[in-house]
Every structure is written in C-alpha cells, then in structure tokens.
Length: 213
Image (cartoon, rainbow, N blue to C red):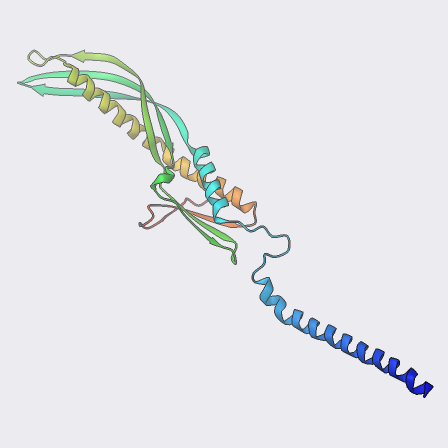
C-alpha cells in the first residue's frame, strides 16, 4: 500500500511535466508560424516610420527656407504716339522680387512604407511678389500735342513691375528655388531612412521632374 501511495505523486509529476513541455512546444510552433505575419504590421528593429503629418511639416519648413528675395534692376523705355506727336521716357527701375513655392496652390504627399520612399508633388516655384523700390528717369521728352500726364506715370509703373518679373525669370530664381527645395527635402527625409522623389506641377496636371543632380 505504501508503494502505491508513493507512485501516485510521482506519476502526477511526470504527467505535469509532459503537459508543460507540450504546452511550450505548441507555443513555440505558434510563435514561429505567426511571427512573419506580425512583423508585417510592425516597423523593423531600429527603423523610424515617417508619417504624412511629419512630411507635410517638413514641406512647409522647406517652402519657407527656399523663399528668396532678389534685388533686380532694369531699364524701361516708354513711348506713346498721339495726333502725330510722340512722347518718350527712359526709366531705370529697381525693385525687390520675392520668389518661392506657394503651397496653397496644391501639394500632394504619398508614402510607401514598404519601399521606404516618399513621393512629394509641389506647385512650380514662381515670383510671389514684386516691390518697386526706385524709379529714376534719365530721359523724358513730351510731344508737341502729347504731353505727359498722370496716366503715363501709372503705365510706366506697371511696365516697370512687369519687367522686374521678366528679369527675375531670366535670372532663374524660380529654378533655384525648386532645386533648393528638392535638395533640402531629400536631406531631411533621407535622415529618417527614406528616399524622396520630388516633382513639380499642378495636382491634376502632368508632373515635372526636378532636375537631376
């Protein structure tokens, strides 16, 4: 009877050990089977996951950084003929031209976490504002029947603004802003382990690739 009592606890311990080992085995199989599925929802070890909001904030910061002010000087030649009489004026105009990217025109951000790429479409850079700071007349001749009037001064002023914009475009200020935006965004987002593709164009228009390095 005593031997029978001793064997029962031993048998119970053996059965418990078998059940424990079996449970561990099943847990190991389950972990091995479902681990790849779980990893697809989690970022890899040490990886940073860029969010849409972060990219938008970086785009805003870059848009402010690439906005540049350029002092431009040009010559305006005004001529008007009336009643066979011609009046002329040669004016040197100086102004400040602000060029940059207007984000209100539409911005698109697409994230590819699997490929770790960010696609950003920005509006084309353009002249944002023109401030005429100086108009200096070097030659002004009124016609016999065609004197200068206040309306002529207004016309000369508008011509001056238009020529400042044209001069700024010839200097390539918009192109410099786009190139700077591409480089800055690339550096900022690359630091998070992502590659960025920047294009310029309207949201519903064909995109224009940024210049290559």
